[in-house]
Every structure is written in C-alpha cells, then in structure tokens.
Length: 421
Image (tube, rainbow, N blue to C red; front, side, top):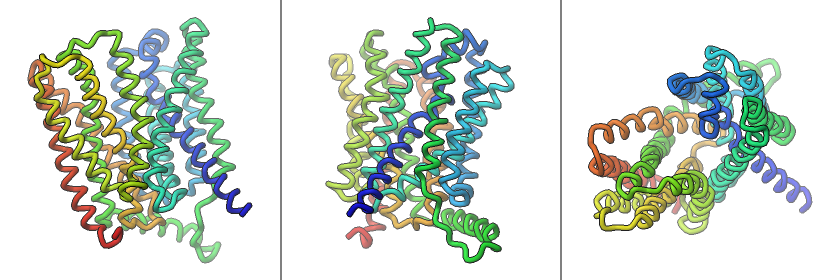
C-alpha cells in the first residue's frame, strides 16, 4: 500500500505544481492587466505600442499552437515544461531592464512561444495523463479553479510589492522580477517532479530517427482523427460564447447605469470568483452525475443559450440593477464551468494517449481561434448598432453559438454512445 500511496501523493503534488505554473506563466505576457498605466509611465509605452505587442504575441501564439502539434509529443514533458517556465523567468529578467520597444516586442514574442507553444499544450497533455478516464472532468475542473486562485494571489502579491515601493519605477521593476521569479522556481521544482515520457524506441542507434517518426506520425494521426476535430470544434463554440461575456460590464453600464464602485467588484467576481467556483462544479457534475464531460457541455450550452436569449430581450428598464448583475453572473458561471472541462472529452472519445500532446495542441489551436477575431466581431456590432440594440445582437449571436454547441455535443454523444454505454 505504501508504494501506491507514494505514487498517489506524487501525482497530486505534480498536479498542484502544474496548477502553480498555469496560474503564473501568463502574468508577464498580460502585465497590462494590473500595470497598464505604470507601463506607460515608467516604460514609455503608448496605447498603440502595448496593443501592437499583444497582437503580435497573439499571432505568434497561433503559429505556436500549430508547431506544438509536432513538438509536444516529440520532446518529453520533463524537458518541455521546465524549459518553458525558465524561459518565462529569463524573459522577465530582460523585461525588468525596461528595454527599448524593439526588445519589448521580441520579449513578448518569446513569452508567447514559452507559454503557448511549449507550456500550455504540454501541461494539458500531462494533466490528462495524470488522471484516469473517470477523473478527467475533475482534473481539468480543479486545474481551472486552481489556476484562477493562483492567478489572483500572484497578482495581488505583485500589486503589494509595487505599492510597498511607493508605486514607482522601482516598484514596477520589483513586481516584474516577482512575476519572473515565481515561474522560475516552479520550473526547477517541476524538473525533479515530472517523470520522462515513456520511450518506445527499440535501439539507441535509431532513437533520434524513431522519435521524429513517432512525432510526425502522431501529428498526422491527430489531424486525421475525426473525434479530435469534433472536440476541438466544441471548444471553439464554448470559446466563442466566452469572448462575449467580456461585454457584460459595458452592457450593465448602458442598461442599468452600473455604478463605478460596483464595476471593480463585478469584474473580480466575473473574472476570478466564478472561475474558482465553476471549475470544480463543472468537473464534479461531469464525472459524478453525468459521467460524461460531453453531456455536461450539452447541458451547459442549453442553459447558457436559453438564459442568453431571454436576457437579450428582457424589459431591462423595468428590472433592477441586481437582476441584471445576477443573471449575467449566472451566464458567466455556466460558461466558466464549461471552459473548465472542454478538454476533458479527449478520453471520452478514445483519443490514443500516445498522441495526447498532438491532440491537445490541435484542440488549443482550433478551440482558442475565436480569440483572434470574435472580439473584433462583437465590437463592430456594438459600434454599428447604438444602445441596447447592439448588445441584443451580440447576445443573440452568443445564443446561436450555444445552439450549435447543443447540436454538436448531441452528435458527439451519439457517436461515442457505444463506448460509454
């Protein structure tokens, strides 16, 4: 019993450290979330320069997900994850020197490579392989909740450091160094915790060739696997709805004149609180009640679509502000719970575990693609349709994505029914 318990302890320690990494690896790339004005004041950056850096990094991330379809199963997680975290650390050290804008752009490109090409798909692969088929919903749900908690704590610590040093340039530098140090330490710890990927090579002489062949074969196999495409498209639909919840704050301001004092509170609950609550709830219902992440996604799409459609055309002028806040938070909670488990169906559709890295990379590329254009689509709708009418169209479009999600989830459930029966 002792070896089994030791293995179980190591599994959860490894999982916990992965969560720590997932909660910190994007902090430097999204430094603007907490330090937008200090970046302008002390690094001499304009709105356009910060926006351009984010756009270029997003483009690199897109191509990074494509490259990771090959890399994630080619390079062992014992190398890939520590390398990504230590790479983030080094980029943070460079960023703390307040470099020129050209160097700033290069740093943001490198941050995207480390986070999205090296870390994220490999982390998803590792989480899947750490859990059994029956644990997938919980593993991904707890991971999302833990990531939200770590994200919040690390951000507040960095803000505390910045404030303690008088909100000066040196305070910003210290906060950046803190953001760099945390993933660096986690990367070193992960190197000793993670086991190397299992080798399938027959001889040492052919090791390099066979690894390349296996990686390419895995990538091709993933691209040809219909079930991976189906799961990826389902993630795409969830993320398309997720992009729309960003506009709840301006909507509440437009429809209910949301007081400025409530904007910050609402934002914290919507961005962090619901992530921490929705993740475990979605995972537990998926595993313990419905015994199927895909069935849970179908239920989530149904609830989200119905409430969105109703919310769009409610008589908002007759409702109180708290009604609008509560309904919008219910929608967000549903979406966050779906987002927490949308990678979990990979086991349910019997994706071979040896191509997990390629499958997760492909799903990340397809699934997160709405982030590259849906904000622009929703924004253009709001710009071209003044007042509540624009938001009604946006919420209707989100409801249509939810409807498509119901149909696709139903098809996937029917496709895997012989497996899950």
